[in-house]
Length: 242
Image (cartoon, one colour):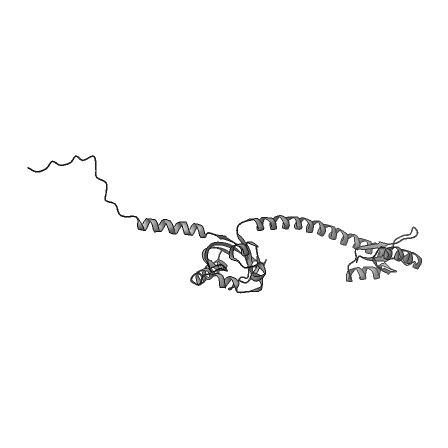
């Protein structure tokens, strides 16, 4: 329900305003002087302020202060509303981008086991775990990383925290079906203005097919037989001995 504050000392005018606004579904409060209205505005939020003046008069200093305060609040509110609208549009475009790319965008806790604060919907399509499961289980990420790759990943993260704040790693994870998948992880450490580490923002890109191709190429090179050197056709053959 919208709340309206009426500043007026004439009870007849106040009653008239109350009658019409309440009929339209508004919650109405009224005060008789600007000082009390200013205190009320600082203590509560209203969608509309009405300063009623039934006859021409010279505004008091308190009324001018009240009007100036309301104008300032209204300007800030208008700017905030416009900013929120722009942020909403940007957030919508960013959300569509995140949901369309074939990778897992995430935000996690700084320390191991890197509890997930946010994860993209691709986490379910790639690894088989829903967004809710990622958020509810603080150790899910650590459970899914291959045991042989955990320590190396932790070491890279600790090194990045002491240095550039950037991590680039490749490691294996297990999906819900138990299959091993390779991922390339690139993350940046988010810090507050004082330099305190707040979270990891990163993106996981599956590279299983690339790893399989590399393994196949390496296997083929190991299995290739050693062929004898080709004869030098520039040297004529020796005649047989008598």
